Picture 1 (cartoon, one colour):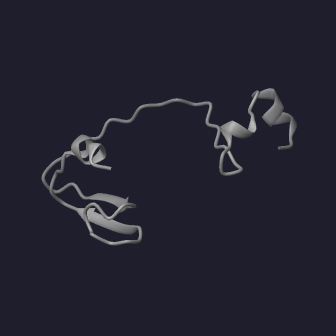
Picture 2: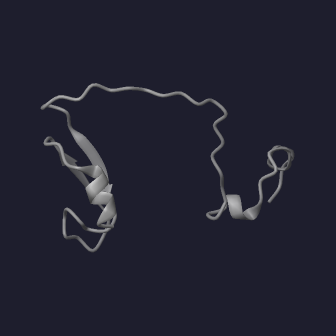
Length: 73
């Protein structure tokens, strides 16, 4: 771990388990209005929706309960 910025932010190896850390000092919230034509794109890492053994990109137009899906992972 090198760099003055890393030291200034008091980061440790535990803060960067994959060897990097993305620091964004700006916090902003964006609200999106969804409708029946909204397309949801995500990666199905565990094959919950695709049944695939490998991560697969998914697109859905219908609304799914994401909190319920997260509980099943």
